[in-house]
Picture 1 (spheres, rainbow, N blue to C red):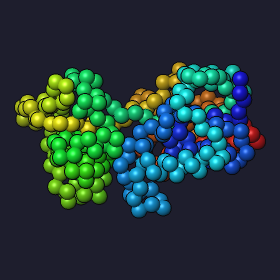
Picture 2: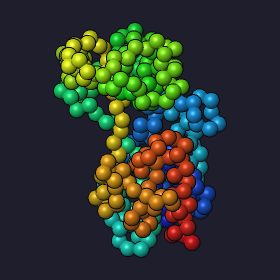
Picture 3: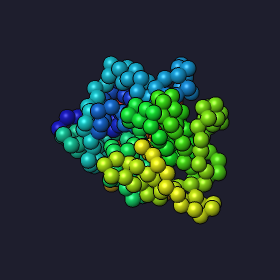
Length: 303
């Protein structure tokens, strides 16, 4: 069984930053990533609020972060953590899809995944009109009618990006006003992207591909069929915290890991950082939490 000072679970902004700090502190560390990249971060089409960049895509920023992290710590892709066992002080066993490891401390930065609508037809048409990533699938819908479901930052960003690709975009939102930041809403108006208010998708229908969605207007109590070629779902995220919960790590009622200001959990030598801790889900916050978690691990274990 390979032994490490610190194992970081998750290769997003928090995990990569934690890796940079751990490596620079001389800790024998490793990052385990269940995917080939850094999860949903790759799906962000553009951002204008990350310090040092006027505008950059999630994919490009993560590549820069990863290139920097790999100078300090190895990263293993396609290796999902299945089980974590706390053996005693500064001894934690990690079982993955490919092997077993032992660490003095771990940082859980597994992030979150896209929440689904849980309506008839959604699962059936994934990859055949139902999408969760405009960056990944948007180019397939140039000159076609698509809808974006949601009202937060992610939904508005997806709509603006799809419009830039030449898609005919409409936003479907369950309320009468958006939750997105003001500057995004202003961009939406500039692009003249229409919004269907007070409405939810009740069913997704088609044959080989999506053809229509059944909309229910919560205000008028009316139902209508809307012809679409694609539906991009951006209704929030849910934490990937099952392996942490199975270990006994405390989570809140929504499933997010509870930490103190030093990113410590209720179990000694187990830390958490990034979107998995809930709160403000911004890249700069995730990076900060990753740095704090790594410094805390060094202080608690190595010193």
